Image (cartoon, rainbow, N blue to C red; front, side):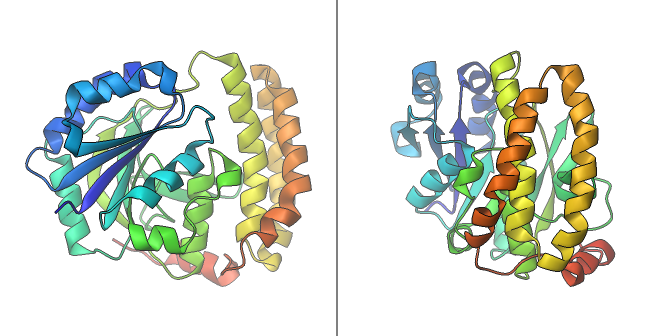
Length: 303
């Protein structure tokens, strides 16, 4: 019986998946692993790529031409899994030989904990999510001494029961920040993430590369989602400190967006983040991340 499902959300990913999927198949050879693909652009040809590389009984394919977003795609896929754990894996990640075996061994060692799997991209190595006073959340450097806040959505292992109990990713965020939102909620509730020694090559940004319209959409979502994540997950005392810092950070980011020609979507995202904050906060009734939790995160060193 399979214990791990590799869950991948696809969007304009056929070319990339044709490069990476053969490495997944080789890495999964002889392991209790199956695959589930949530395709948000099914006209792209990914279905054929999958069928060319995997036997019919090894995978499930979920097309959704409405493109509900990365967060919703993950949630819909995890809702259909029958295994105890999922590995959320971006389509632009390669799996070296032995990578899945190491991940499966880590699952068996600590079955109740999320696992942050390392990614090598843009000249650096990162494992999970870290906090940042300017941008609220960033990729966590592999050399950081403290443990990760939570797994990055690009390569994350979750016990299915835990993921479902916390409601999965907040679907309104759509993409970019949904993993940080879940990480903050998990950490505030006492759930700690382990880091894997596996580091996977990651192309990064294939779905928006070279498309100005999609770059603008990403700038909008990042600006909006930082504010919504803060509103949803931080306690009121920490919010009183974080909001002025985020405001100053967004002023600095605005200068960068001007240079990139992305100021208008950025400002629209800030406006919608401010307007949507109260509703976003009401949507999460659970534990929130406060000063005591922050102190624990900054000072306790973990494996």
